[in-house]
Image (cartoon, rainbow, N blue to C red; front, side, top):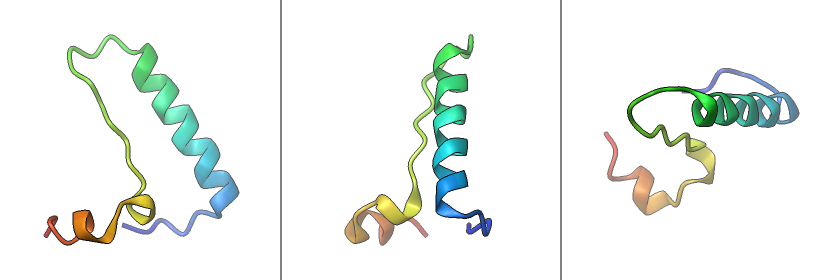
Length: 47
């Protein structure tokens, strides 16, 4: 999903979200990956 967020703002938002997940009390791990940075063969495995 593309949100139309400029790359600089996206980097800040991703960083803040990762930090929030790391500091949360969630009983599971949350991995946040940027679609564009994933290898094409990995992307092709996701419908």
